Every structure is written in C-alpha cells, then in structure tokens.
Length: 320
Image 1 (cartoon, rainbow, N blue to C red):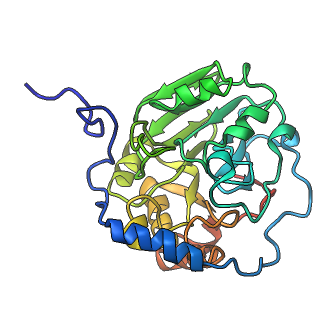
Image 2: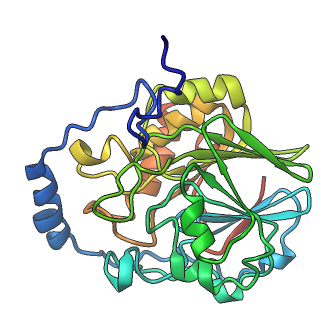
Image 3: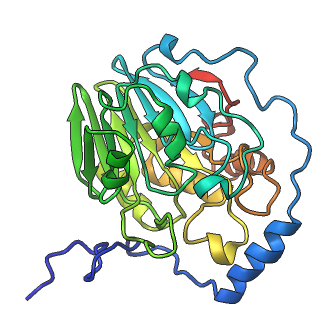
C-alpha cells in the first residue's frame, strides 16, 4: 500500500528536505573544524559606512506596499493595511541562555517598542529566527496571530501566543484579505541536542489582492524553487538570504550563496529580490560584508538586473 505521507515527512516523525536538495556531506571532522578553528579565527572587520538608515524607523507610519528591514531576517511589511513582521530576532545573542553568536549591529527597533502587529510570520525555530526574549517582550502576544510551520506552535504558545496556526508545505490560511502559504525550503530545524528536524522549516508566501511577497527564511538552493515559481509565483518581492554560506561543505544544504540567492529569485519568478541574513551577526567565518557585492554582481551575471537586487540599510523603508 502506498505511503500516504508527503515525501518530506519521515516515517518515525520529523521532516527532511524536498527531493533535489543538496545532500549533507559534512563529516564530524568538518563540523569540529568549523566550530573550534574556523569560527574562533574569524574576525569582524570594521563596519562599512551606510549600514544603518539615518532616520529612525516608525513602523506604525508605514504605507501600503512598503517593506522595512529591521536587520537579519526580520522585516516589516504593510500589505492591504495589515502590518506583518517576519522572524523577529531582535536580541543581542542567537542562542540559549545568553550563549551563542553575538549581534554586532543592533536592530532598527527593540522588541518592547514594536507597535501592535496584525500578523507575525515565522519560518523555523532556529535562535536567529525565533528570539524568545524578543517575543516575550512584545506587548500584544494574546491578540496577535502567528503563522508558523508544523510543530513550531508549541514553543510560541509557551511564549504567550494563543492565536497560532501551523502549516505544512503548500498549505495556506487567510487573515482578512491576506493569504499566507507555507512553501518548501532547503534547511533544517532544532534548538537543542535532541530535537533536530522534529519541527518543520518553510519559506512563506504572503499575498494581498495587489502584491505577493516571498519570504525565504533560511534556505539553501535546490530544485524545488522552480516548482515554487510554477505553482505559487510570480512574486513582486523576494526576501532571500545571502549570508552565512561558508564553509560550503557544511552550509550548501542550508544556506544559499549570494549567487544562488539570485538563482532562487529567478526560479520563483520574483520581480525584485532583497538580500537579507547578513550584516547583523557572524554565524559563519566569511567576511560578513562581502555578500552584498556578490549579490549585485550575480544579478548582472545572471541577467536578473542589478537594479532588481536590493541591498537595504537597517531601518530603511522602500515601496515595492
């Protein structure tokens, strides 16, 4: 009898990447070298000028079809009058109990200063995407809906969020005139030693009657993005990760290079792509400021158009 489960559901529980994703080739030796040598030797270069917008960010004043970058993978979107926030990592450390990589550039808005949101969208449960302290500091936990992948709701409910909807890939739900669809991504999940891949990871489509946005969360490159383009595209805006990509033997199955980020934008048929997941925290040993240059060059090389590959300042607002 055929197995009724979707291909990304494991028989014993948990999840795996979609078919056509890069395999995980890293050995224990590769991981130890990365953690004990590469990351210890990595040095933060001087911060280049122009990383932060000059004007303070006022999320409540955002207009329809505007996007604001708060840093890393956290964006605010105003769609059909609704204020949506993605992956609110707004703290100092990406890890439990104050341990883990430290942020070198503060977010555009503190969690306690967030206005009331209409929706929070979560892509997966890693510490640089679900910041427990930030989510606790938000003042409208009971009132604000949250949409997340399968299994992530338990953590969010513990943090005080009662209106939580979990989605599997290709499932959607509606909030007034907005439709949010969970889509595949090439990544993994886990917040401890014993919960790897027990909850799902996803990219998210957020659509109003007038605009459609793809939020990539964390993802490597894979064949699934052409399917997303065919089934869910085109998109007016793609928010795609361009940082934390070295060493490739480890990161190829979870984080795209800047060049692969442009390929993803092309595959999903996005008119404009914003490079994210860079410039706030060093998760991997490469120069954290080389990604934007490679992203723009890749847009030229792949005939995507450099003007369509946006690099935003932290705190900047743009119309799309």
